[in-house]
Length: 479
Image 1 (cartoon, rainbow, N blue to C red):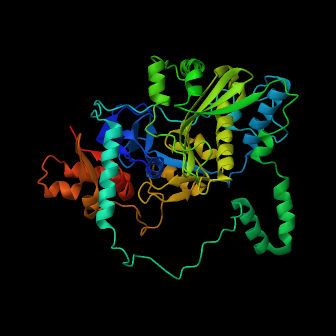
Image 2 (tube, rainbow, N blue to C red):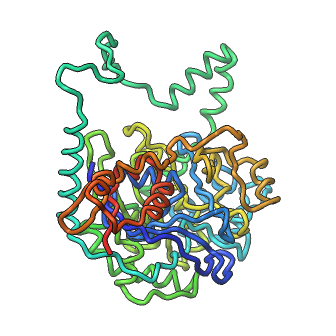
Image 3 (tube, rainbow, N blue to C red):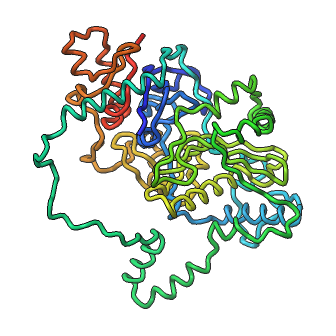
């Protein structure tokens, strides 16, 4: 595990990217010099989000448009009729080359949907670029500081380790040996449990379920005779392939921003700062996915033309969508929604070999902003409670509550608490970078008579990131 290094900026008010209100959006922010992929997974599970190297978390109780982190369970996901229409439309275009309008294909179900309506905003996974604070991070040698933090952690671990031969908490000499028997796939386990519960009648229901087309059935048809070929390439943001295709991806991004958002990017450097820059390295643990964890672009090549790019982070528990942009000339294919389905397919593929990686994170669900409610249309979606950080199914009951009041605790259990809550008693083990050569825990810093420390700000930061990250990450305490 690499060491995460961050500098906390505090809170700021700014113009809202959803309701366009002036100075009414309140968020907390920090600069991430480096982020371990597991640390970022834990941060987004507390409502954080990144844009380049800048990480931010909305103060939902005070901001104008509360933003609830939303995820979809990729293994429980079911296609809607609208999803199927979009997939069929893409398959027909690839097969015949015919450009059908969104209303030409009802596929006989007689059901209209906002995704297919003329003039409806196309689904794009990603938020407006957050306003950056009017300050710059302290300049540090990241690699050197990381080595200091690693050495300090090793020293602390050795100092607190039990003596050789001493019993350790939770040890059990008579524990059963670990079985080498391979685990069943999650889907097969669910089917086994269902059969056991329903008995003989399960054979009928299982058959009906198996006859329903899956996402993979739609995406991986025989394409040798197709008029067009659609190929997806997953490239890490630091790979040579990314640099080689940068002219095409920047040109596509510029076209998208001008046509869809009327907001042309300043230059290629601004594009890279927004969608290439990342604080995460490409981590490749032995039990991780083949491409490793980190930040990637999933490129959609139609024959030899780049028509869409999904900017994603692959993390230990999920695929997190950062941004999605596409060629407006192909908007008839509903590429935003199609891209979301492709990213769910990526989750399902990764889940076959990586334990725990089964979720698709879509960023924020903003119920008070009608044009941003589309993210709640995917089945098996969950919202993060902003107080207890527990995940709850996005149901009509929750939607009704959000209709009544835009901010909700979500978790109805009054006794539920944040299991990762940071308390004042945890402050001693927060690790600080004091200067270019000094890294130490807060308790040692105070014993040395430390005075240049804003303890209230450190506590505020620690509560926002949670106890686990507050102890693992290095807090830059330099002016």
